[in-house]
Length: 176
Image 1 (cartoon, rainbow, N blue to C red):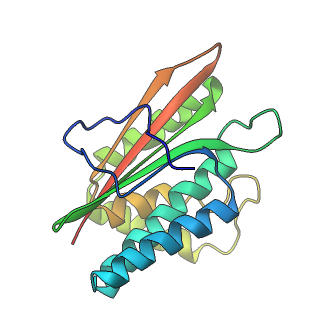
Image 2 (image 1 turned 120 degrees about the horizontal axis):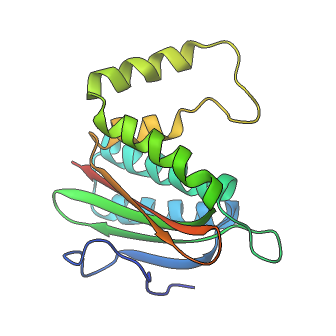
């Protein structure tokens, strides 16, 4: 099931630790987490860093299962690739989204990118303390969490595909 990722935004990342393209579901998410936990255990990676990486990967992959376009069988598809070095861990996810989502996502990502890190942490705390969460949209914590965890080391692009569909690529780098 490991194949090359068709769109990698960083040509300096030559050797992938893990590379997958296909259906993204809870079983795959579990396999990806187990694989990376094994790698981190063999390298005696700090627990705090390992937890930061794993929770960030889970958040990103769950977003694909929630918001990505579904294939003919009603299952979300996407790509996931990870890279690991002495100083950081980088992963890149991509999936197709509906064109109606692009403007909203671009606006949200732009706002998060331009906000100071402390402001993002405050927003995160406020949302955690809210008593009611909209079942349709959730708590809106996922992207905030990724921006905070990565110290805002996130990049994203949207590539136009077939009619009203886009390929959304999100790259997250986490430093030790």
